[in-house]
Image (cartoon, rainbow, N blue to C red; front, side):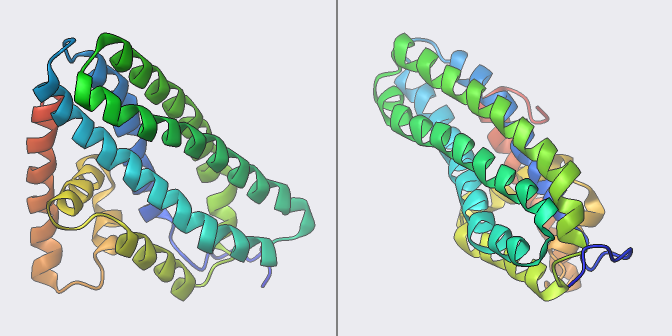
Length: 225
């Protein structure tokens, strides 16, 4: 399959909507952690729950790309484009290594709310954000155009359905959808829900937005951070 085809096979705007969510949530996370007073374990638990949800969701997003997208593209792109895919893999490794450190630091801070644990966690989240933005910018500018004209609609749909299957469910799943809806392109969100009946496509984003705004108010002090 040629990557020089002028007309894309798939619309990657849904991926951009998801990226927008991760940029916002990782940008906000260090400040949310730092606002917790030393020793306030109850408040630390609220913020820690949200950080855990965001970082777990991001890790699952990366894992799906590692398993399904990069190998597929490496089979099809010309040799001169392969370094772009390898760059994505390398950046994933950097971000995921930081997420692993966050995952190790989070339970301790949740339990103690100690200032030292808080500051270390906030620093790790800040570093993860810097590397994540670098990766997402590169992915959107350099790799998504390749994916758009290389993947088939069925393959792209499988990527999305696998990510949703791995992702959180129930109340947490609704919050994650709300995080996407908050700043995501409404048309991209509708395409994301394309298999659902029309009433569900209308109702679900509204319920999800309210779920996220309740969470944002609890974590950030505002419903529209």
